[in-house]
Image (cartoon, rainbow, N blue to C red; front, side, top):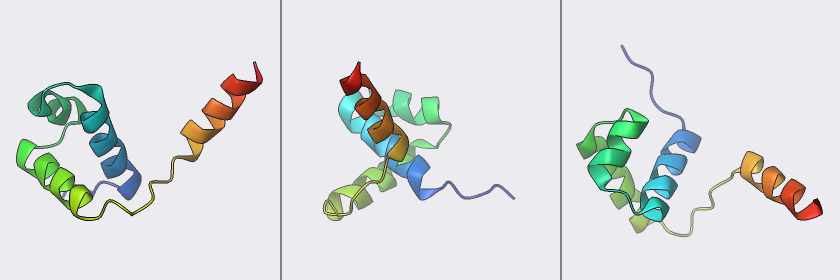
Length: 68
């Protein structure tokens, strides 16, 4: 049985898809997720837009770049 993707993985897949401008099928394939599953994640994210997405690695990287 395959393991379930983490919430961080789902959030990253959704964020990438919405920000990249790439076709949805390509993003789903790049993340190794079925198109219908990925599309459901997008729909769920749009229904709950106030849910904060925690990306500590990204925030740390931005902070490091600002200090350079």
